[in-house]
Amino acid sequence: MAKSMADREHLLSPRATRNADYLRRSGHRAEEPVIRPPFSRDADRIIHSKAYSRYVDKTQVFYLVENDHITHRVLHVQLASKIARTIGRALGLNEDLIEAIALGHDIGHAPYGHLGEEILDTLCRENGIGGFQHNVQSVRFLDTVEDCDLTVQVLDGILCHNGEVHDQSLRVEGEADWDLFSKKLRKIEGGGDALPCTAEGCVVRCADSISYLGRDLADALEVEVIDERDLGEFPENCIKFFGIAGEEAFYDINRRVLDLLIRDIIAVSYDSDCIAFSDEASACVGAFKDFNMEHIYMNPKLRRNAEKIRGMYRYLFGRVVEDIEEERMDSLVYEELIRAPWASRRYIDFAGPAELARDFIAGMTDRYFEQVFRQYVLPERVQSRFRE
Image 1 (cartoon, rainbow, N blue to C red):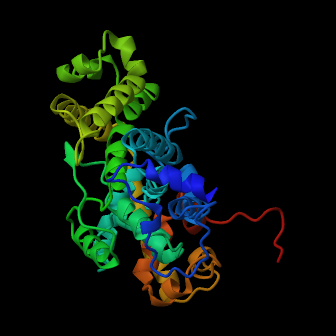
Image 2 (image 1 turned 180 degrees about the vertical axis):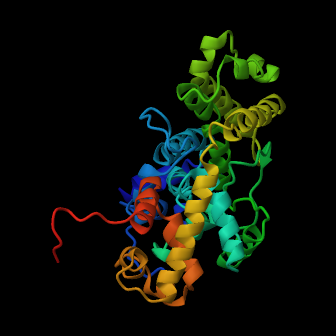
């Protein structure tokens, strides 16, 4: 078995990350590299984390929509992982590392997707604890709150994913080192950007960027956020590149997008020192993202509940901070976070009230967020008789 693993490593590209080069912060947990290589072990730790379990009811784009056929966060990360592993396999990269980064990259998303991130960012700044970015929060959940003891290569890839930004070309930045990782973390917390320290991290960043393009458009058609008038404004270069002939082709858009863009990335990156798109594909990705931003993400239909959600966030944040400051031991934040057996004691001991409120709320699913708000705001009915 050990020889088989070694033979597999020998077939990897020179730019691939070797399993032997893994770097953990503590190294205090036993390793069995033959059966479970280090990055495969990281993927397992992510899957078994409490934060990963909460992917199941976190919004991708369309919140407060009762439709079982649209994408939720849990499906998005699986799609991103599959796309990234397909690219990585063709390029001879470490698929275990790719999988771990992809599965963990969006764990830090707050309820109601990017709207929630925007609101929580404002509340965090008002409370003097800096801004809120979901990639930083993903690292915080896995490295600090749950102390999963992941490798720096995985945490770096999670931190440096940025699917909202379009890069035609990505090159490895820095190396696997805890001090460099801390510098990147501070840079991103300050509003900057940083690239991954591995080729595998670059592949995930690219895959994340393309995984939602066609899927979000297909979902928007499914829930009727957009219609044929919007499709009439779809970029001409995208219509040509993806071979879209007629309105019915838009319902097959995700397959077309992924097939052509995956092939393009592999072809351009194969004999290169970077992970990149061709000029034509890059222009199409940029135009596609602009179309989705205007017609989907900023669509008034999608944001019609934004002010109500903003008010809910503000109330819950203030109430949770108050519960902590007043040491209300029977409050939800004590039951579900502060006294939770899975939460790191070191984290609990050193985090302030606003930081605990941020992490408690950011970790909520959409459904639980609404449940907690109702529990705090609505009066409790007595079921037939007053009883202890």
